[in-house]
Every structure is written in structure tokens, then in C-alpha cells.
Image (cartoon, rainbow, N blue to C red; front, side, top):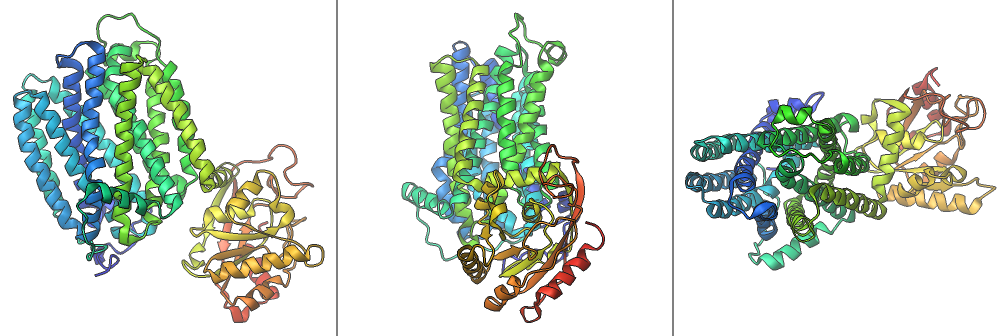
Length: 640
């Protein structure tokens, strides 16, 4: 049974206009609630323990509380580093639904013991059980993210991942609130045990509805040596450099998230001089921000994996992280404020706004990275790549705990100054990653242009072949035609454009990163012309999409000029289908030549409505410059 066939037939139809319709499908809903209950239980348990340490454990002053809270966070994360390599192998070898149910049974057993530990208020036993909870979560992680692309279509991946991330942080929110409320009750030690056990049983029950997911590599020989297998798993992640750097980006996000979430209890108690209810409020705002940012990803990306949102997310993380350091003035209050007292104090709304926007931009950052790892990894070893991601996540989150111990314990930094360090480090890491993979920056520039100056409508772009070589031909209206087309199409495109446009400042960076092919006139630049034709042929031989503008120049009057015969020579050498396309509405925009020189002065209009339409593919045997000109002109109509 193939992965495609493993989807229930009733769910094979489109998921609808937005990601929420996935909740009506068996291929997503049971899985979502299974992972939701797992994350919810993790956080009820973990945050009840952290609040116990921060507010009630007999520790020696603020430093002791800071250090012990970070140790507890590290204990939960450590199993991901130790066991993820083994978990990745198991997830690739065996059927995933069966594995999920076994893992949920482990959770039930652990929570039975946790009930006893909460009853006796044994911090030591609870920390041991926290390690075991981390262990079962480490085995669930590779299954969780590798089963998503088996049950969802490619156009559903952004929405599905957004819902999972939203659900994860909603679970963090509700788990934190539940852990906080139960830990404050006089009989909370009893109810905590009952609740965590009940959640574990609920997770197992809903997991029974997850449909079959074919094993990726049933013949895989398991390596039980954690050290050698960890190294091997990391090598899988390094096969494709963009995937590996995306994994590092994801792990960095979890370092930041762990740092903020771990420090919030003591930040609230010692800086904001507020009680546990304010901790819950801050975590609520942060989690809501992550959920909103994750859900906005599908709308902002047009249901595609839009890497341009990643730099946008990292910019927001740094800006609002910096502001959080200075958001709240020192207070001389001796008692702890409740929610009403905190909201009435100076700077409280600024703190809440900073945490909200850190969450929103965090959603922009993390969802496209997860989807990219899933799409660009071979299915046969996808679980092991996800396991490598979990290894790095664990390493970075343990590093987050160590950073907290070093800066807050040894160097005696205040928590706001620690937040400042994190924001500066985030900016440095972002610059480093984007310099290594300029695709992120290129997509960010494309996304920015297409979402500030233009509102782009697409028509019949499904006529572009999903696989295999093809040539796209389009009218040439402005300097950003290639960016508009690249932003609208799902497949990467090799553009052929005049060398003078290729060399334009700023745009040249985008063109070079996108492997644009510069071309010159046959008589004026014969060598550049020959090199371009050779590169076009090689790209088509490799099964790539190539887009050319047969007019050879930008329009001077908004009308389509005659198509040159170069397209016929290209198809004669590489007989592939040709898809005519037309751009409408760009004439008169900042990057067009209407009124004289393009890009002269300040942009005359923003959010212009433009359209990109595709026609029926033309077989190689029927390609002529004249026929393609007529097809593009008909597609464009009277709108320039």
C-alpha cells in the first residue's frame, strides 16, 4: 500500500478553502488530537513542577530557584538528545499508527506513577518522571512530523503544520494554566495525579482513529548504539544543505522559546513582582501569539511553503525581544501583584504586546521551516531527518538551560538583560544562516514586493506541469515580472532575461540566487547569447522549468511587442511543452516604463491589483513565435 493509497478515500477530496476543514478529515483530526493531548499533558506536568519549585520548594533564595527551574527544564529535554536517533530508525521501519498507540500506553504508565509522586509532593521523584515523560515524547517526535506528509497533500502541508504548531502552543497554554490552577489548590496534589492520568488515557483513545501509515523502510536494520546512530542520523540531515540549515533554524527557535518560557515564572515573580496568575496571563499571551502567527502563515503564503516569511519572523523576534528588556520599569512593591494590579502598573501593556508579537513572529518563523524539511526530505529517511531535528532541538534547548544557569546564576545577569542577550544572539544567528542560504533572503524580498506594492490574483496556474521540463513564455511589463511569476508558481523557475536587467542593483541578488540566465543580443553579445542557449538546454535536460520573455525588452507603451524567434530555436533543440502566460495590471506601476524611466521617484501606487494567468500548454511540434504571441495576447485581453 502506498502512502497516497493509505489516505481514506472519503478524505481524498480537497481540504477546502482553509486549514480548518482538515478537522473534518480522519487523516488529520485523530492525529491532531493525539499530539495535542500529549503536549497538553507534558505541560500540565512540567509547569506544575516548575511552579512548585519557583514558589513553594525549599530553595536557598532566588539564585537557587533560578538554577533548579533550569535544571528541571533540561531534564525534560535531555531524552530527546539521547534517544531521538533510535526513535527515528523505529519510525522509518515500522507502521506509524501502531507505534503511536504503543507510545501513548507508555504515557499512561508514567502518569500512574506521577499521580503517586504528586500526592507525596516528592520533587525528586517528579524530576525522574519528567525525564521519562521526555523519553516518551522523544519517541513520538519523529512519528509526529513524518506522518503529516504521508496523510496530507503538498498544498495542505502549510495549513496542517500551522494547525499542529497552533495546537502545540495552545496545549502549552492550557497545560500551563491547568498546572498553575491545580498547583494552587489545597487538594491540588491529588487532582494533578487524576488529571495527568486522564489526559494520557484520552490521548491513547483518540490515537486509535489515526489511519494506517505505510512504513518508509521496513527492511531497515536497527542500530541500537546511541552514539554511532546519532552521528549517522545527523549525516542524513546534512544530505541537503538547505534542509540542514532549516533544522538549525528550527532548533534555534526552540532555544529562544525554551528560554522565554522557562524564565517567565521568575521574571514574573522577581521583576514584575506579580503572582502565579500573571505567569498564566503572560504564557497565555505568548501562546496566543504563536497560534495566531502559525495560522496566518497559510493566508500570507497562499497555501505554499513560503520561505520569505522566515526572515520576517526573525526580524520580529529580535525587535520585540529587544523591547522586552526595557518594557517594565523597576518597582518597589514588596508584595506580589495579581492580574488587576499588574495591568494597572506602568509598562504592563508593553510587556504583553512584546510577548504577543514575539509569539506571532515566532509562528511566521517556524511553520515554513517545518514544512520545508518535510517536503525536501526523501520519504525513505524522513523520520530519521526529523529525529536529527529533534536531536538538535534537544541540544539547543539544553543549551538554553545552560545559558540560563550561566547568565542568571554564574554571571548574575538580571532576567531582562538575559532577554537582551537572546535578542542580539538571534539577530546574529539569522544573519549567519541567511548568508549561507540566500534563498531565504531572496524569497523574503519577493514576498515583500508582492505583498506591499501588489495584490496578485492567479488564474489557471495548475496548467503548469507539476514535474518535468517545460518553458513558460510571458509578456514583459516591468522589472519585477520575474519576481511576480516566481512568487506565484509552486515550482522553482529558471528565468531568462536581458543582461542589463539582470545586473540591476538589489534585483541582481535575487536573480543570481534564483539561478537566472542572463542573455544578450545575438549580434551585440554573441558569446553571452550562445552561453544562455546552452544553459537553457541543460536546464531543460535536467527537467527544470524555464521562463523567457520573448519580446526581449520591457514594453514602452504597455502593448505586447512581437515575439522573437529565439523561442523556436530553444524548442527545436529541447522539444518540451510551452505554457503561455500573461501579466495584467502592471503597466503604470513603479517598476514599469509608463511615463518615462522605470523606478523614477517614489512609487506612485501601492497594493495594485494585478493578475497572472496561464493558458493551455502547447506541444513542441506546434510551437511558433507568432502562435505564442497570439496566445499571450488573448490571455491578457485589454487590461495592461
